[in-house]
Image (cartoon, rainbow, N blue to C red; front, side):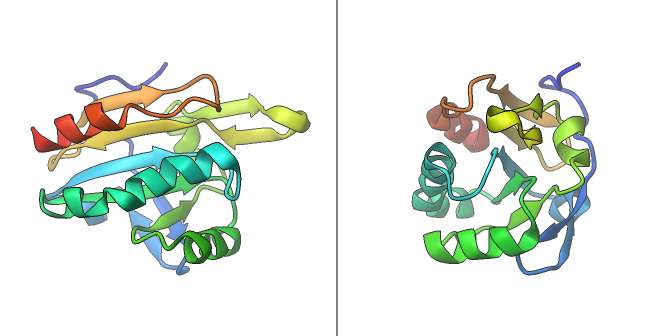
Length: 154
C-alpha cells in the first residue's frame, strides 16, 4: 500500500553522511522534501539530487528542508555528498526500513541487486502529514520538481 496525500508520514531514524542520527521529528514545524534515490554515483540519481542542490535556496526561504535517502552506507553517501557539493543531508536507509515504510522499495533491482530504494519524492508539512507523494516505477524517470516547488510554496 503506497502512501497518499493526507497520510501521516512514517517516522524514520537514519544515520546521515555525517554519522549523526536524523529523524522525521527533527523537522517538526517545517516542511520537509524527502527524495528517495536508488544509488549514489549513478546518472539519474545524480541529476535528481543536483536539481535539488541547484534550487536549494528556493526551499530555504520557505521554512522547508530537504533530505536525500538511499540504501547506500553513510560512508558512500559522505563521498557522494562531498563530490557533488550537496547542502542537504543524505541519509542511509541501509536496513531498508524507511524505503519500505514509504513504499519506495524495489525487492529486486538491476543486476540482480535486491533491496534498493525506488526513486520517489514526498513533501511533508509542518505537522508531519504528506502533502505530495510520487513513487516512480522506472528508475530512469525523475520526480516532478515544479510540482514539488508548487506544493512547498503552498
